Length: 360
Image (cartoon, rainbow, N blue to C red):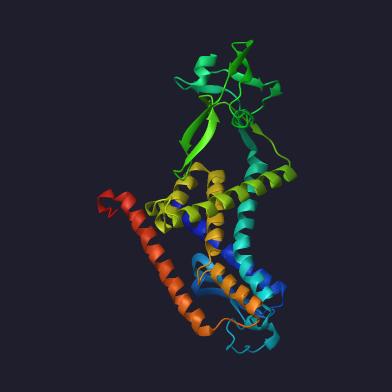
């Protein structure tokens, strides 16, 4: 029951927050909003405030915003003026309204990360050696498990991230590691070797290593003030945006296999699993999915916000709208692409549960 409720709340929050971005941008620019609904029809409750009808609908998996004059042929309904029509506004205003949806997905992710870091603090791995790789520079230098690295070439090392950065930036020169072992301090010398490894996309990358792994159970939690948490949350959000963008590019380049694409079933399973782990884990997953939803909507595919932004950009450059027939054809094409992707993602979700159904 808890898992089902978590799925409904998370998916509803993600889509409703996206629509809230469109709504607030339209209101801020004086564009008429006929209705703003939390959930999809049938309508359960409704009230009117000003010109807009606010609704709570039965299917809690998102929401929608109905703007005045979304198409040029639409007439302004009763109570609205022609100047409030979306289609009559200059391209830059319409672009702001369209862009606000994905931007609000990023804002939601930032707010969730802010809440996590402000309440939970920031976990940092300590520079403690957990394992030494055989036949590595670390073995030759005399490293052992549980060694605490205090400094490299006289520069203090506080966290594992400091250690990794120092090794990566050495370009292969010999480094002097000041190490604490069983209450005594040692100086070990090691020359990092250039290693060819694979990144998260399966691509070969080169980096300098000495052959040690961290002790994952040795970490410290740093409490953060509100401003510090906001800054860390912004960096985390940008990191996920960048990673998500790279993932879409790698999918197009066929670097990331199509069988890795997940759909609604996988998302629901992930949400259900994280709900059992606690509120912080569920919030982190929601932030991650929100970023993915925002980036997905910015793809230049007709039907998506990104496709509409392309049309509006062309209109701004050409100083006249894109031909409606062209927009209609490309929109249908975009809808077909999305439908194919949805079928593929759903098939992948099913195939993960039933491997014998695999076709590739």
